Amino acid sequence: MIEVFDVAATRRALARRLLRCPGCGGRLRPWGRARPRTVRDSDGGDLVVRPDRARCTACQATHVVFDAALLPRRAYTVRVIGQALVGAARGQGHRPIAAQLAVPEGTVRSWLRRARRSAHRLWTIGVQAIVALDADALPTREQPNTLAYAVEALVAAAVAGRDRLGSPDADLWCQITVLTRGQLLAPAPAD
Figure 1 (cartoon, rainbow, N blue to C red):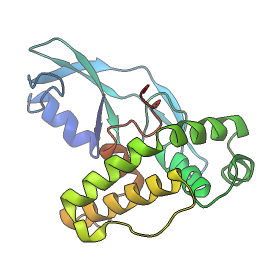
Figure 2: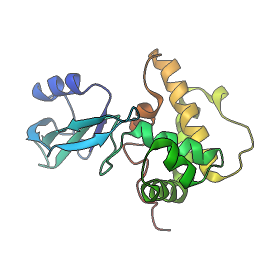
Figure 3: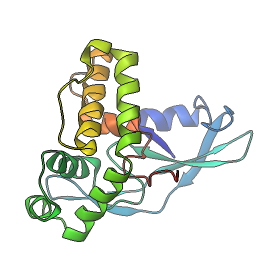
């Protein structure tokens, strides 16, 4: 899976074989498209997306090219999921978050469980990115839980990246998706 900000530019680069395989570094070429899926956005509207697929000319591995607003195997955009994570970081429970976002309670509960299990890994990714981009932006406030630390670090890293790269209109949650390589809600690794 490859997360990108600009799908059209990525499609052109893929056609010219300018992209590299994340596994072996070989050149990627177009390889059709993934199945269509419907994803709900933060405005309540549905998006039908059909991500591009790419195949490495060297190792023959295939990759799905995702818009940074999407997460794999999720029926909601990262903006909706991000709002849920911010609510949980502020101490809200899954029921009020679900009601506020018009998302089933069980869905929000599963997002929060996954994010809490991976909070340390997410916090580490955020802190490493902040240190690389702008060490002065490192958050120092006391937080009530590990998820709050993780969300704060990821948001600070996205803001530092946006400032460093000069893209003030970039969506923070899309940047966080790219920063976490689409693994925002991935299961925590076994210890």
